[in-house]
Image (tube, rainbow, N blue to C red):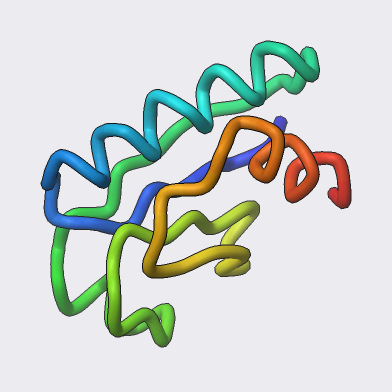
Amino acid sequence: MTKLQILGTGCPKCQKLTELTEKAAQELGVDYEIEKVKDINEIMSYGVMITPALAVNGEVRLAGKVPSVEEIKKILGDQ
């Protein structure tokens, strides 16, 4: 199972990243679970200074923007 973590405080961009990440994972048929990391200290422990960010299996793959579904699929396909 792939662990997808959305790092952000719950802002509209964070919510959009969650929605697009779920869509990309479903389109790829990835077995996944989504975890929302909202604690600022925990977010910073990942080395993320700008949200939203996407971590895949604990590794930050994207930060500071909301990508397209296709961009997320590319990130997930690299796993």
